[in-house]
Length: 289
Length: 346
Image (cartoon, rainbow over all chains, first blue to last red; front, side, top):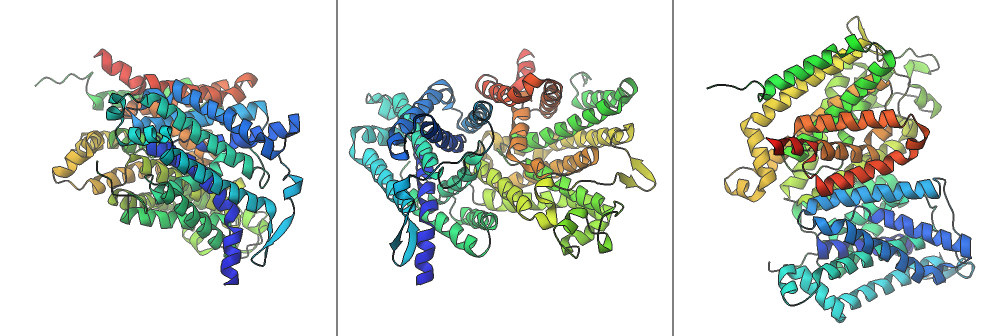
């Protein structure tokens, strides 16, 4: 039991980061059908924005959450308007376009900031550790977990309890019909994309103090986030959350007696097996189409 | 029936291959000959993606993994042929000695035979393709999932090779290879011999792909690309055809990988990294993925262009940016690539 609890607690922070990244990816994919290959790059940009705020203006992580979200969501909005908008009738090509966007973003950062590693400090009042079920955990990791849960609830509230969410669900079900009822579905798509990229950037800002920041950091996270989307299906937020926990937990568990790379390889193989049996994902709802 | 030889692809391919054979007569500089060889190898890599993506509609974002595996197989064989100078007992490869490996691992043993190395350079990519195909296409996963899984598989293989430094050379790859010798004949990477080898293989692959695309299976590939369900309703096993297409593509990529090791004289994990895989997709997208020849030319133009431009300081860093822009623009405005322009004029 002790082993189980320590596993659970040590996988909390990786799981929460994964949840934030995958949530954005799944919301965008579920609504617009676009797999955003540049999602990992938005994680990276979130981390760099946070680093920028901290070194240039001395802003702490908490104060910069809202500016980071606004800046990156605006970027997402602009990219959707300029490029992705024209490809909704060729969905597979959006993979290519967003991949190209990812490369450009990565190279822009490399050219402007440089490719050497950057490090961020954990906010001092969160650097200490606390005792949780007899385990020593750093307060920062607990904070990340609580924040991810808060984001998840916020996303759920936004989608199921607000007027925008109602429009979003209508557009997801049937774009043309929703447009007939006067919903500006193009606008809904833009805001969904912006929201998803904003979430990715927040995840980046939160992961930055735990790991180093580099232009390539997005690639590491995006694969796990893809796995979450493949495993969880995209129709339900709960599915995304559950599969984040499954993948985060499993990777952490395997990594505890081998290493991160082998864990990643094994998780991928397991997911490929699952894909054979349930191609629509573990948590897909049966929907009438 | 009158056959218009200028529209006959067999004839046009023949002329093109013949011209490439004549190339060393004009350019005799070892450096440029070596460069041209690498461009042609990349062209083959683009051809390989064109089969699976352009003809069958499998958006394989991890095509470089097959290339990389082929390249490693060749490198392992050539590494064991080098004269052991700084090595330990039994002619262990140098990086293993540095990593305190005392015995040659079992999976290196068969690579003492060059024929096995060449066989493995095709077989291992094909086996991986069968594995992926069985699970992805057997489960009828849709296009997006195919893209994700192929990309993820490539990244995982890449990470594994980086991680298992003791056996694979890790970040540095496998360097200091001997040149390829078949019988008493030596293929010099900077001489015309390696170039002729590559152009011969290229000619073979060109006509092979032409046969495949003109065959019944080739037509079914294209039908699957255009409307998968209709093909399924006609009674074809779509999964098997898709897997077959992926296997052909993987085999060609494996061959290209082996050739690349021969001309570059090393193997590196970057041969199966995301940037290379993205480049392959860009070559095909720009050249025209639904045309074998278009993809080949796309690769030739872009790689030679980047080779030329990255010699100047200004373009070295902005090149990736330019590539990204070209890619997005071609996706937006030229979905059929350069080959599409010529098609329209007919």
